[in-house]
Image (tube, rainbow, N blue to C red; front, side, top):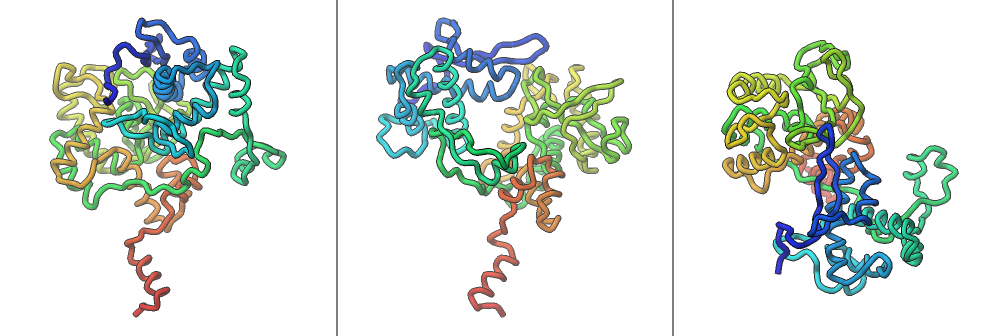
Length: 398
């Protein structure tokens, strides 16, 4: 029988509202008491997005542990590996009954990496703090030889002799991914399928930048410098600053957290994205129609246009739902997601820049050019150049 999404009579994640609008996450029992073991571990990440991610990953493991009748004092590395197998990892052992049953799906590669890192940190921290289970601590405290990439990333990397390893993680994680792009003709079809000026602006802004949906729905009006030579002095062209704020009323937050500040009413810092003329056009269309009708003075850019909370900040989940419904109305194949716009934009920039990953990294605010090259720098299997090269090798060139 599938586990219910509504958790009753079970461990659950509790969101704690802090002064200033920030949030913390902990794990509580059905009676509302805090699980001290989990709370001590999660407090190490207070104020970061990692705390939320680890809280939801850890609560799932603790529920499984209760079913198996295990505790921190008695659990072994084999037991933790059994859990990883039960949630979707490939482990060379019987792991018992699967834990994630339909309609839930097994964890993907990314979720498994998060779970492995979370569980290693949790048990090393808990066992050391309570002075128990030295066997598990020793099994988790393994090391490996440093790779060339490890040495290049580290200060004085040439003297490194070992690196921490995780026996719960996949041995050879996939290095090259093939991100899901937008279907052919998706941009014009979506622009025709949307119903409001706000939705048109969202589609255009996602299509013309590499904005993440959390950053877009977390924008404030003061973050927008949609004119030449703005007072911030950081970009001569029209642009916007994506600033991480933990206290947004819609709980939207930018993923990346570069420093930013407001001086004399002018935002500086954050992630800077250039704005296209089409973005500016849809912005003014939205501000003079939808926003002018319903804005409530909270200062955020995107607002709800219907329902009991009309005029309040629009959430990232609501934006995802709008794109999904617009994709269905446009009869586009698959599910339209905000991430697909980011992948498509980066791929298009790489194509027109002769495959230069450094340009794509800068334009798309990616972490590194190496990552851009590994993910997007492979040839299109259906391109004319790829087909011509293959035919030449086959001896079929005209």
